[in-house]
Image (tube, rainbow, N blue to C red; front, side, top):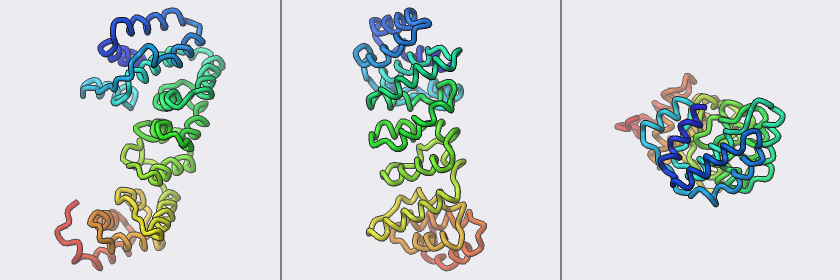
Length: 272
């Protein structure tokens, strides 16, 4: 209920009187009638403008404290859609899941992106795993971004294979991994090897890999991965050299200390 109250607070100060009345009327007439909520969800852009929301620090913190993520940067119609969907009655799991599945399975791109953005707030969370995993496989950028970035659902409910697919696709698409929620907590050795394999493909094609990606490999340096770290030391890119040094300093694998000594001269005056 906290998210609903916070959402209503934002909407009340951003939408027009007419738009606000329309939302209030939908909630009033839709009691025990989820078809009305479904219809309103689909029709939302006709009634609520798509202006981007920029939250001040105070209300953003309240969102983070209450539901562990924030709708900062969403559009008004997207936030209003979240407000509508969260009025689905969760008392009957069968009816609740049925109503939302109908939306997931018939949604166009913007609707699907919206549903995945606030999937962490839906009741009966395990029911939405197939849709969240489909979003990772999606070729629609907004849909992938909705599940991948600033979204706590994958880190909580994805198994290792699905999680690794999400991270690797982010890297493959050239997007920053820094906005993946729970990234450091879910890093794993299999992912480190997958990143190494992808890096080898890039190097073979004369291309590089973002330096930030190697932070996910650092905790798992072994006899195989240390060769990649040495290649970073040999790179002309100072960021690659820096991340290699940082990885070695954080690793308990003894050969990393030998690498630090080997490349000590080239690393003088580098700060972390």
